[in-house]
Length: 558
Image (cartoon, rainbow, N blue to C red; front, side, top):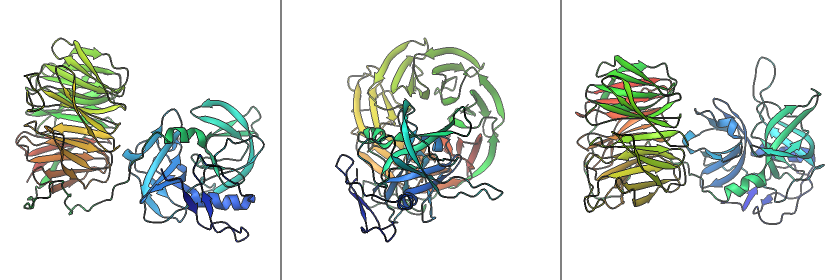
């Protein structure tokens, strides 16, 4: 972490120093006596505006390379969508939503953005705030009147005390605060950051407003235990990725697909899809599963049974059964011929984020926000084992399509399960005995999706920074790092011949990659919302993609 930092000469000429040194959080600091106007000048230099589905304010806290880290309230960015950071110079910077990190147990989040510009960073106080001291609260509220424009506001007040912690809020002050200032800084009389402003409440006397913030010391205890992601550079679509294998190769030929049908579901989000022979299933955020005909896209049936969002669907190889996982913490096994629920599997203590069915139909695997993977007998519903090892929620699981993957499975012990987690790792497990075969580090990048190649030799993993790692499943070595997406990759799928990898991203695009060379072979654009799921047909001529705004697209090769 970079805490030896300086603020440029942003104060008025009456201040003798041209810079204010930002010392380590644990080091003693000598506070400079500043006037209220001088503190407001400091506040304006480090306070940003956050625009998006919700929006508010934030504080420039850290920098690593060209990546800046904004500290704000979680409730400012808790609704997924397209956000932008507006820095004090008026420049607008895009945000990778999948790189935003929430601070557990607190209404705080860290929002990264990238810029070559030099922006001052907030100076951190190193001692608890004291009641009766002066404070400045700053932010970007919306102006009154018909224009409704954001304006910078910094108000003076006093720290009045502390309250019992709620979502991290402990520090209370009597400054005037307005909507839009959530996430903005609370500075002491030396211009140092002591808290993040967040909540306002009216006392019995409606003229009395009490505001509260989360003290920076509380946040730093968590911050010292984690690494934050780096915003990746955004390569152009024409620029091939740089593979680990740098041996000479011929450029891959382009693959062209055209959208032949766009389907609209009543659900806000289509989280997952699974293809059969002449139909496919989609998991919907309204708790239903839709079964559609291919290639026409006619709705065949709607499966109802889950009580909350369906996050994952996986069809058996023969297309007869479907497994689904939901926010209601259950897995359901469906008979696709009748549409009936065969059985419901319960045992997870958190939302089920991913499911997979083994190629022989014997096993169902489920990954959950409770950080575990469970392996079930698909025919009886018996829980066979619980796989424990990830330190973060499990985003994705997949099972190798072949019975064994030499040299991973020795002695005929069975196939291999791969899991990807928010903890940044991929784990390979023996499906039968539950032992960890190998752990692959993702460099602190949340692993959002995984898929085995049809021969089980390669493993693709989509990451939160928009890259896709292509790994040798046998030895755990990285083959290619595929770069091109500009937001998290939530779905990956191999063609049946293993030559092409399809990826879907929150940058609203679908990309096709040559597995041998790592080159980009095509980009499919047209989604109006985030792409959260992709699948490719057995003959490689049809791609189905789905995502936000209830949108599903069917693409045909041309």
